[in-house]
Amino acid sequence: MFSINIITGLSGAGKTFANKCMEDMGFYCMDNLPPALIPHFAELCANSTRKIDKVSLVIDIRGGEFFDDLFKALDALDQADYKYSIIFLDTSDEVLIRRYKESRRQHPLAGEAGSTLDGIRSERKRLKKLRDRADLYIDTTKMNLWALKKKLNSIIAGGENEGNITVAVVSFGYKHGVPMDVDFVFDVRFLPNPYYEEKLKGLTGEDDEVSTFVMASPTAVEFLDKVKEMMLFVLPHTIAEGKSNVVIAIGCTGGHHRSVVLSIELARFLTQNGYNVHVRHRDIATGD
Image 1 (spheres, helix red, strand yellow):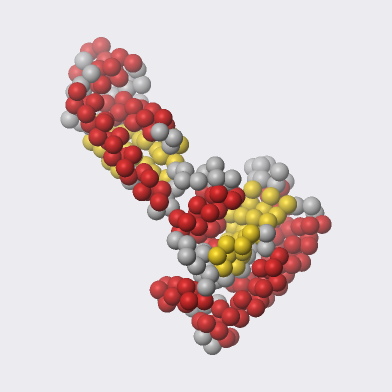
Image 2 (cartoon, rainbow, N blue to C red):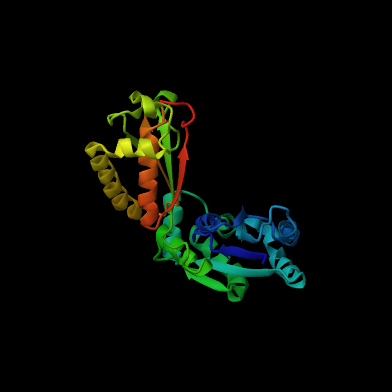
């Protein structure tokens, strides 16, 4: 069923980050959409061939005079029978002032009010009616980004994505270059190379014979155990920092044998430990 989450609240309370969390949960996200366009946007999404069924919109005081059109837009959604929820994020004045000082940004209403505090107070007055209409109120005063993400996961996704992270394990060949945008790189060129075994040369790490050959090495087993131990230590801390994906690259000379075997073994282990894992063999067709 098509649904819309409208994220609003005080400037500096975490709305942009909340929208990124929604994106991680599979929502189609827009930031600072003029409220008058919401009904038209909802209609486009609902009838899209892309089958967009979950939308998250950040609507706040940055819309200026257009912000006043929000309640008309909400009435239009009601008339069109579109399901929506309003999520209101709030934070104490003290925390908001500190955040604005740290970011060296000006509050959107500070110009007309004369100061950050006056801007915050003016914004609270303008948002009171919307806050009273909110389906979900979240006070982020004592929350870090991870706590906010955990809260949203628990409420919006029913906890199914809480603490979840996507792990990509990529095998590659050093002679073709190290993959870009990776978090961890492991070099397995020190392991016995199946390429020099005539009966294994034409096979890949996806073949049982090659896997047996590579994992028959005590060094390979010990190395894999150490990588497993490291990942079990690192990934929970990575999740705690709010990161939603990690890329682990394992390389051998050509990306055909050893790196493929180790990538498969590591991915199998992480999957067994509850992680959402994808494996990709970048250079498997090029040979060692």
